[in-house]
Each structure stands twice: as structure tokens, then as C-alpha cells.
Length: 341
Image: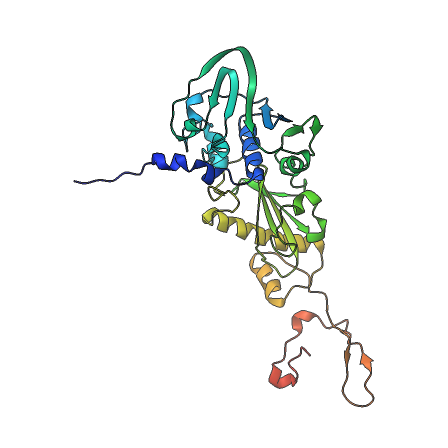
């Protein structure tokens, strides 16, 4: 019986530089992610003579054969469950001459090595703590690395200048173990500069998901108010996944649906805690369905013009003893003007 089997063609390796290098930002994020996954707390980046040196203080490389095995990685099960690493690794530097040192071993990956030519692993006298990578690239300038390193949890130093580092969410964020993360709701104007640089649009991208330093935005508006939602993955097992190979969008799987449902609940809880709102009546009812009791909406009457002679501006005031919950919207036919009476 004829059978077929999935496999990776060597032709894919010849296209590696088009699949994985992407942008300079992508290379920076990928190598910082690798350092953090290896247990590093500090990463030094040095620009020198047209080359970039990235050195971390992580556990180092235990299996050099995994470096050029596309899709394979030697991360532990905890990391696999929490981050779903793609096994791209150093392929983000494909076609460049790359020198890697770790422990007492060293390899130099040349252009042909990226497409399958064997690479000898050398033994060195010097013991390298962590991992050091050296490769040609445009400068990894401080201003760029600074914003990309902010939420990685790493101390990153570029040419002797330490990058800023801050928590992605505040202690007020709500833990959702079913998602492996925390959710915080903020007013749109309460975002820091480091948050806003990840937004493509001021009005859209109101959800920012911090995937251990890689921040992925998307748009979701469970309520009509302009709120911002921050989602910080904690390293617990999660079903939230990044779309490969670009890793700039979330996979719309079951976990993504669960995330959106949790965001909706947190939006209403935030409004409840705030104590005031101007939501539509349908949203007020939706909050009740979710078990969240909201106060009545603040009246939003406006000054208008009365017909007749003389025409004068007149303010409409809601009677103090007339709750909005007992008001009704008249049909256009009954009101004559299609307005709420």
C-alpha cells in the first residue's frame, strides 16, 4: 500500500533567510527570547567593527546538534508547555557567518552550513559561561534594543548602557490560571510610552499580549467604552499561541476564545469598580448576565434648540426621582423625530 509521510525538504533550508530573518527587530527579539529561555538574567550586546556580539549568563548549550536542526529544540517540558517554542533559534541569522561559543565548545556556521554542509564542533581551552554569539549585522543601537527589551524580564546592556525594564502589568492585574496569565484593564490614556509603541493605531490594538517580551496587539471591544487591556503571560502552561513564522499575531484557537471571554468579564468588573459609566442599556444587561451589577448609566442629555418663536437654547434635565432603568426609547413614528424622549 502506498503511504506518504510529512518531512522537511532540503530546499526549505535554502530559503531559511527569507523565512526567519524578517526584520532587525525580529532578530533582536528572537535572540533575547533564547537567552531568557536558557535561564539568563543578563544579556550583553556589543557592536564592534560591523559585527554584533550577544552574550548571556544562561545555562549554555548542552546539545550543539540541535542548533541547525530546524524545528527542534532542547527546551524543557515546562518551557514547551508555556511558550510553544518553534525551534527556529539561530535560523533567524541564516546566511550570516555565525560563531557560537558555550562551555568548552565552539562552532562557526558559514553560508553553506545553513543549507546542510556539515559543521565541525571545536573544543576550546576557554570555558564560556552562558552563550556568546558573534555575527555581522547592522548596528543593534541602544534606542531600538531599549524598547524591545523592556518587558523581557532581562537586564539588557547595549554598549555599556543598561536598557529600561519594567513590569508589563501592575499588581492590580487579575490572575487567570486557565490562561496562564494576568489581565489588567486601563483607561487608554493610562498606558505608558513603552506600551504604546506596540500599538499600530491609537484607536485600535486595544489588547496587548506580552508573550515574554514579544508584545502582540489585536483589536477587541467587548464594551463601547475606550478601554485598554494588558495580558501578561506568566510562564504557566497556556494554550495561547503565536502564529508562525512571523510571531506577530495570535492563533485564533480555543484559548484565544477563552482569552476574549475573560477580557469581557474584566472590562465589566473594571467599570463596576470604577463606579460610573455611559454604557448602552444592552451592555448594562450583558453585565447582569455575567453576574456583574453595574450602577445606572450617567445621563447624557445635551442642550438643543426648541422649535417655534423665539428659538432659544434649552437644557434638558433628568428628574432626580426618575431612574433610567424605567425609561423607554420611543419609536421614530411615536416621537416624530426619532429621539429618546
